[in-house]
View 1 (cartoon, helix red, strand yellow):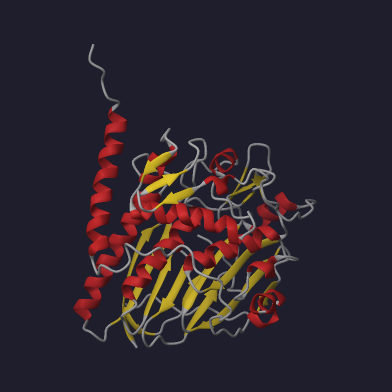
View 2: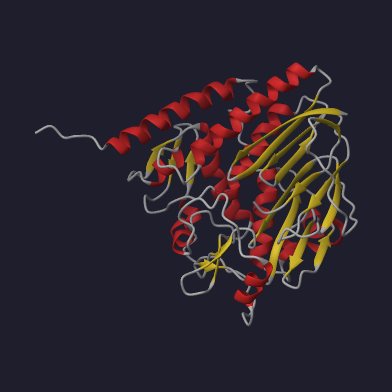
Length: 76
Length: 318
């Protein structure tokens, strides 16, 4: 008797194939990052420049075009 | 510096990408469209919540060596690296423990516990620094780049978690680095740069959505924040549930810190360092924040760790 393939697995395989193909196309855009690992940065002693001022309020950064707008970091 | 911005939902949160418009607004808009496509593809390939993602297929694959895309190879390499730089505290192989703690499906749109509920769950609990898992399953994850294989025992499942956001921001940053300025906000993980990057204000948000706790001034580099309040829930037995697992105990950690923000050169590094510092607890957090950061304690008090104030930095330089 012919063995039937699980349709969920078939859909998952199809999805994965489409995503992988699309990734190759996007990775080729600019052609710079796809071959170079980014996941092992070496230890650095040069820190980004920072200074602090506690309890300040956030600025709106929703404009479509702006001058060095503020950004925010938090849990997502 | 004039910038164009594109904002969209991805990685279970809000993503925004900015580039300067010195080469024309059309070119900037085109780059931002491609940026969105790239971020969506990375999410689609590496989310654990979709059975068709490459990560889910890897986790279900019974082979020890599994053919993988360049992107999945990067994630697998990042899993190993995260374990190494965090002394095993950031262990992305704790997927089963995470699911047992109540995080088996996406929590996008689900509200965390409010301040009062959260405080009630930790009342009377003694903070304990997290400890590494003796098994250190992350050590069993490897990458064969030549043959494009991810290597791991089939029973070891990977959770992309925040690593994917960091990776995505770094990959996109490489692509946008020719602009005078760019900024990537991958659902809270930030990467700033450009050939003439301006100084920006980065606001550190409150763990419970109150007034911002700090402002940082940055011209480049990465910032990431990890915490246990926004994605928190009550478990069936009334205990606190969240997504930062203590590897040695296999349970959501309670170290006395609500949130940690880390600065680093790359978004991936910032993401790992923020998690490691939170899991290490206040007394050892500085060890994992060589480029500085911000701690928010259970009392609500926030504390900024500057790079120069960290002994580990001098040790590393020596």
